[in-house]
Image 1 (cartoon, rainbow, N blue to C red):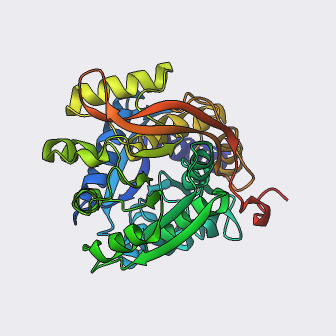
Image 2: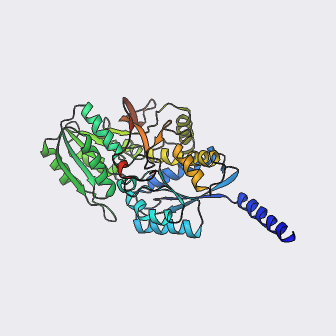
Length: 393
């Protein structure tokens, strides 16, 4: 009897101690290099979201451990290993870059830890590398350009040139837009990326001018100011319609407005989210983000902000124990929470089935350059890689 009582007491003590431990979330992003502007926007959004959820999930304090990948896949993998094995996190999240996520994925998933991307969406992880414990808060990389190609068709584009960096997300973006664009693709260039990225696009822009294209599709995250200035200097503005994704966004636009790079006004994009979406969750997010940080949030910030209400809802709906992987996984699949994008569902590969909005760079009511909806919306789009995923079979 004494042994049984002692064992019961030990179990109760362990359970109580565990309940007092914080839920630890490792968040990997880029906090150095010029791309730190993106990472800092994500960090700001997480900190705001943490306040909005009251700093707790299921009565347990939430602790965020931020790690810098330095824009390097191997460093990202090392940071994921530290978070899982040394820090004992319950979730690893974040990831701007697809090549960093691909490098880190195995370390996280092999240790039965939830992996939630707030931005990167490589095609491999939507298809053959999908996994039960991997979830994404953004559509797969192809999806925004996939939607944008359809928007170009509606807007009468006939000849298109694409210009993207030569890495996994860049090739996915080009593949996405050309897969749905019904006109003629008159040229494609993939420029150097990585530790020594190409920053002079004059030769490529000259090829665009000579190609007869009436539209240029570009993807240069973290390089928008450089690219936009060179686009303006090339004389293409007013002759070739500029379409971009993750480039002329809310991170780049304040710099471009301050520098007077007016060539980006009227340029087009698409996304699942924009600052002017009218629902209570988004209105609160945008209002409070602007009040706290003095600027509009970016699409990177919007997805990062959603992480905590998404996880909070899943853990609390599944009984409050984040270590009950099966129950929490089932709740994550339901995605039953108030997202800044509005309600959505997940495909079998755990990527969103989303609505995508046609956006244009224009001044808002206060004269601030912003991505504004122009009224075209494509509904319930799923990525083309889901058929290769075997998650729910």
